[in-house]
Length: 116
Length: 113
Image (tube, rainbow over all chains, first blue to last red):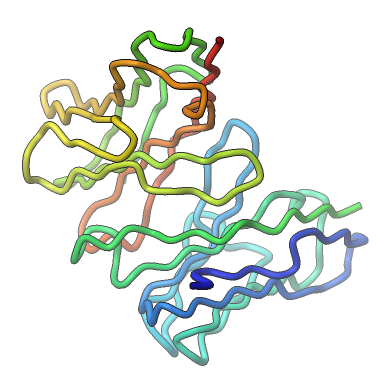
């Protein structure tokens, strides 16, 4: 079973460039989310979606866009990359929100992004 | 508003000795609490969760945690550490439907032979 698949695994960007981080899940999960992980700060929620066509902001949404045109895919777009966006990005999905239906988050293996 | 504080950024134990990873939380509403583990260069995996049922929660790999409302704590314990337990551990809080999760800063557990 594939679970949550993130691509690419690594990416280097120059300041001002744009790119899209891909996330796909094959578990028919309604809830999908993007986190960034920085040393000593745990994971911080960027954006999340509770279903196709529905997205909402998390804790640190500035500089990032998302869309959810299908249940399976939840891409994260960096509009104009900045060095402060150097981080490891994780996509996670669950059947519903984490408190409901005993539905734990399933994480991808992450994308390591460096902005120079 | 909700927040999580993991009281130790690093914990070192010897193999076969007990593990204690400390977590304090704050939440305006009845919280759900989780512990996740992250092995190097991997995503996170759920260890256990508390969602207002039994206050002592058992998870995978021999870990357990106790929800103490009066102390706003959710400490993670294991009676006997294994080398394979070396990883980073995250305490997580959410409330309501669980769409907004707040992670602690993480505790890196080192296990010495």
